[in-house]
Length: 90
View 1 (spheres, rainbow, N blue to C red):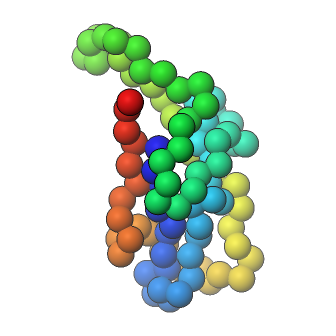
View 2: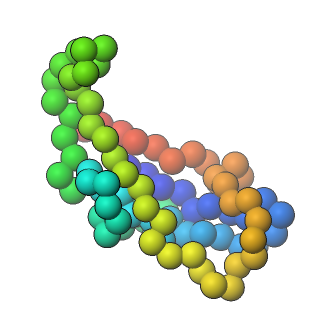
């Protein structure tokens, strides 16, 4: 999983950093901490062989925003200017 910092669309000098997010195979926070533009392995994630249309070969990932910096303004934050998040299988 490769995350990208979220940049403010109104005030481009403000960010929600990728490290503020975690990813987990359980519907819960406190998973694997993400890092900006760095591929990290998601602890416990597996994608078994199978036919996706039959419900096989799938894994669910849950993302949690653990903290928002208290000094940033209320606005839309996105990866529009920095690149998309990527999920890779290896």
